[in-house]
Image (cartoon, rainbow, N blue to C red; front, side, top):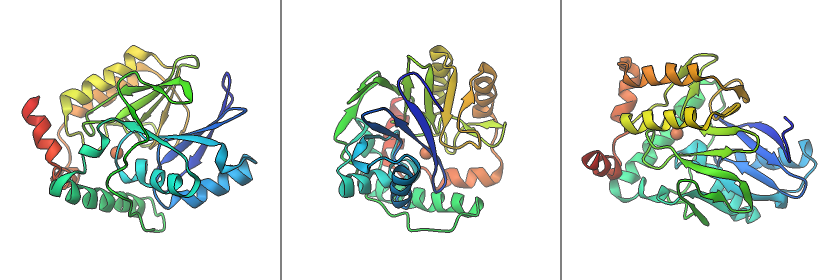
Length: 262
Ligand SMILES: [Fe+2]
């Protein structure tokens, strides 16, 4: 899709959408994808875009989950692509609780792949990302100053969204899940009040188009009703099946530390 200054290409990853923002002289990879996506991203860039992997100047990671950070590590190792991520991303998987959370999240991503009838691949990636650039609320992305990080916790303590003001374009990552016109909060929402504030930030930003990591429609015209529907679901009681996932999403020590502070 053509925008002012760049084109956006959608790469359908292992269980998620990723976006390649193509400028004349550089490419921004929006979110860090799953580890097995690395080879497929390389093929996509070379064959579909006719560009070189060295044209990717940055991977912007929104949070630590396997479908958002898994390929960022290996793309950096293999092609030297630097990573920008929330300043506190590595706290989530630290310590023994973080170790088990990382295992559990990797299992959950493969469960999602099974549900989507995707052939199972090895998802292992290192727990700690050590970002080359640390992003705070409203930080401009390095080399891509037309994009800003927007702090959007709730799903984890450190999620961000990425906003391009000039094109009124907002990548919301996992802030909303679209199952084909049905808008839901992510699983898990570990900090419901923060999640609601993050959703309200989308209303304040008033984007024209939102980009979702999990949606069959990669470029969604925005309307406030999406937010209202999702907000209502944050407070709704989850089915038992979903509640089981909550049981295996609270190992991280940061969950308890943050809940105490809130
Ligand atoms: Fe996530």
